[in-house]
Image: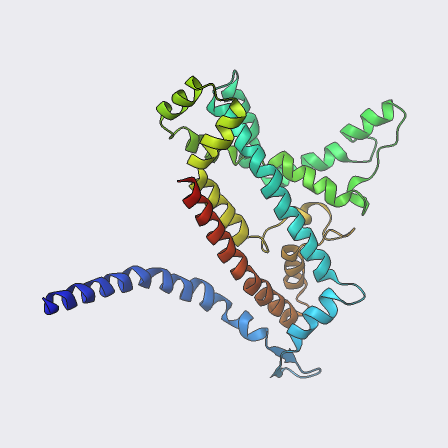
Length: 301
């Protein structure tokens, strides 16, 4: 009996090792292998006038001294803007995508037409959408909104050329092109057994309660995966900064700040340290999000 138990245990261990080998190999090759130079660079500084480098933690000290509490704390500004974009997408666009998906799930009149209209931003290249948006809000006399306001005798402001409006304008753009997630939502809703919905309707449930207490709990795994993916990319993709402002007027985000450093090939050691810092910061956020989503799912079921 003991021999049989040992055999089962060995087989189980071997099975686990085989299952983990492939993702670990992918991580080692496509993350660690590609980024090993950047990881090492974060702990180095160049010697002025010499190609040699020395090992130091100075780059990480600069993150706090210059990036967060210096005279021009760009990293602090970039972090705030990155969080603003994330919260806007999560707290506003995600619920809106659920409700838009609900209307498509109910097959409102003109569903196919509206689906095509809402999905256009996903099939049209981002540069085209950004160019169209800039043309609409252009302060020049040829701009769409400028023409309309001019006809009313009102001067249209330069939305992307002002610290007061630049971030808000890009959030509006995000809302304009961000209604593609409803397709995933509506497809998840359509997999729900119709008997559950019909039973709730017989009990006189309202549309709002149907969404909140039936549809959302039943499609929560899909929502949770979307949330996890958002948290995974919170510091690497945030806002159409390159299209519109290039970080001017207080619109830097972490992703664009790193992109600019790599593009200009300046302070690469410092940029590498910043990348590691935000990667390490993302791990606990992802872990907490995973735990919370699992607890919510457990309570619902």
